[in-house]
Image (cartoon, rainbow, N blue to C red; front, side, top):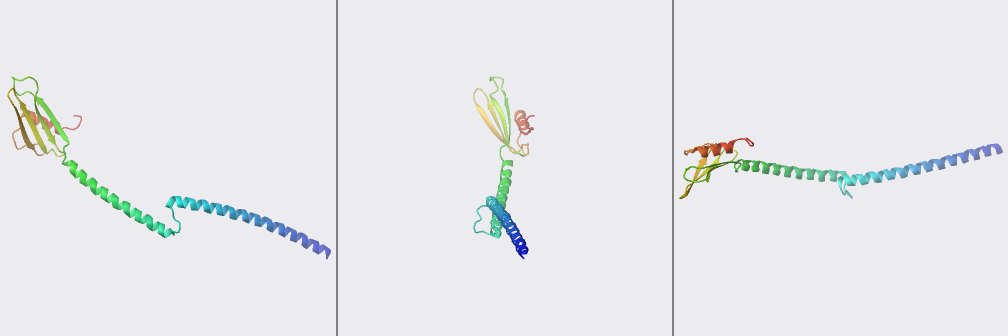
Length: 168
């Protein structure tokens, strides 16, 4: 019987030591899990903003509203882009200048023809004829690179220069 008691005491001591070791391992595991949860919560807050008191559904709803707002802004920017693109097609984009001397009795190329055209070749060609006694200025409408008015060689050359590809 003494032997059985000693055996039971040894078994009991071993069981207590094993249980104490298991408790220490479990305590360490709980500590590591808590630390991991804290790290994950911090990362989640950084990712979705301050979500204190907010459930995941509220966070998703907020992100969906933000996405709708961004989509609306993109649509507005696309409309503005198309409006501006249409406006630039009608703005002054092509310029051609020709200086010349129409009269033998004047010095230098004081006269000029300048073509001011949009992307489609519409606009105006201005001519200035300078002589010793006066200067005359003429304006002629241009549609598609042509005019319904009689054009001088210099005016036609100014239109050709304006319509020429850049660098040509």
